[in-house]
Length: 112
Image (cartoon, rainbow, N blue to C red; front, side, top):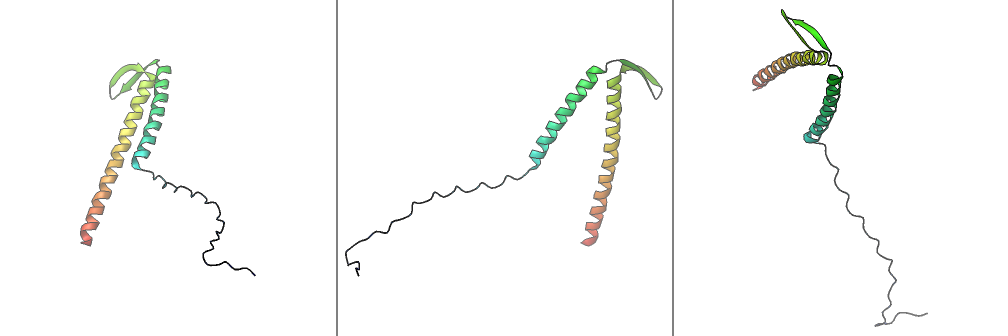
């Protein structure tokens, strides 16, 4: 039997050190700005299609509205009607939002 004597240094072979993986970056959270950026890109694509539509439909049509009469390109007349519809929807939506805000304020005051 052999024993290690005092002063006798025996080295235990070490395993090669494995490199540690770099820390994973934190996931990127969606922000309002990123949503806005996406909305701007979609709006740009829609505007390009709208411009193509207008340029392909330049035939003049007669338009009568509230006793007024005039002639303008078909696509422009359709664009005006779409804008009028959007304004109408925005007015109704704005009125509903105002109504809900008033109801919320009234409920909050009642809780105090």
